[in-house]
Image 1 (cartoon, helix red, strand yellow):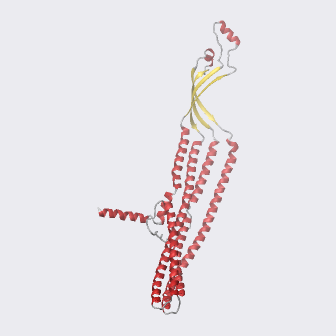
Image 2: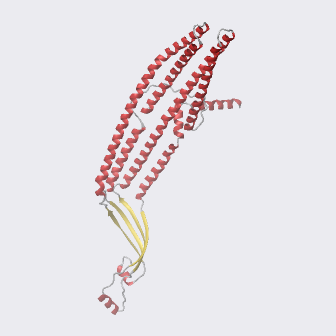
Image 3: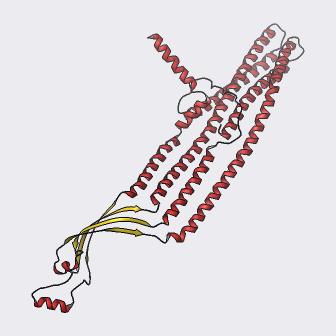
Length: 425
């Protein structure tokens, strides 16, 4: 049982550690960001719109009722009425008060492509909304990257400051020994101690900033960072300079939506054919002569074909199509602007990568030389060739060289991943 618990604990630690990589933090931030719920809402809306478009082919049933009183109604000619009355037949004609309860059933036969265009437009609108959500969520990636690499920089600064503190503590202990032996003065001890306190103060500030950055990242990914240090990403060169940004997919989706709207306009110009049936109970009925002799309600029915054609849509067709053409040109301009800005940003980031690579090539040599000078200064201080201030200057130079090298390494990584983000690689 103990071994099982230990194994589970190790698996949990391994899972926690894997969550500290940049790729994992990107994924968690995307899944945790509230806008991710937009995808489900867009899909639900699309299904409702498609369902509504499909229901246009379901028979449409209308129930209506009315009662009226009119100023005049059909009657028999006076001569005919007189003749009938002579024979004992009283015919009053249709009553002026009338009523009807009706059921109308209509079934589309051909709607000119309106329902098909409606379904295509619903899909195009949903796709556009998804691509907009993709763009919005893609922006989260760069925000996570900035925080992640900011933590890595602070980690390196913390490590270099701790190394500086260790070096100062070593030299301070040595200087105190020299002072006890009468080789050094109290001033030398005080200078090193003051520099040590300053370094510890700097370390506290770095740790505070690092804690704030880690908290921000935890908010983004929706879980605690269990590893004390984040995993440094691998330095992989950027491949093709072809952009695959989600903005380009959004431009395509917007173009497809305009095409769907264009088809909907053409469909609105077509006539519509439908079959219908109507049944009603009321007075008067379809048999007008019977209604002239009796005021009783009757059952009536009729069936037929109907054609409707809204000619008014031709009046606005040209303007509506021109508006879509203008929108198409605006999308093309937006795409060109985006590609231009992306190319300029790519050139700038390529230049930054080259600069940092060249800086790193010299950093190792600079660190080696600064370390050699500092060690020589420590020996010279013992022999009285230099004073404590000179030694501190050499220590500071070495610390700065180490920090610059570490900073350049992180900045190069950040520049490479920034370029990958720009190109969506």
